[in-house]
Length: 63
Image (cartoon, rainbow, N blue to C red; front, side, top):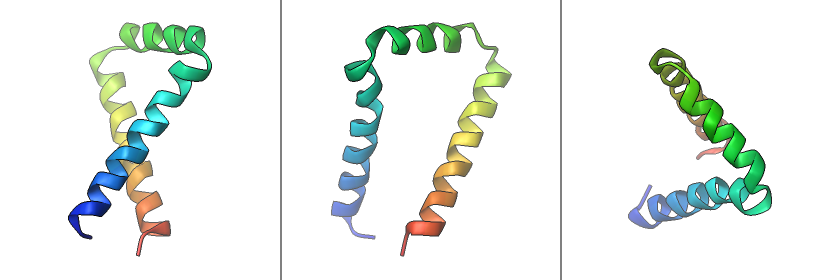
């Protein structure tokens, strides 16, 4: 994977991250407040699950 692909992946991630606050800011605010109430262990598990999901998507759809 060359350097341009990494920048494109970062751009897609930022695009996906920005959709919810753009389309439904009140739901995004509620979700963010719920995340703030989670314990460190819960947040770590959520991060791990997200990373595993990303690796699986890359393995399935990546070259």
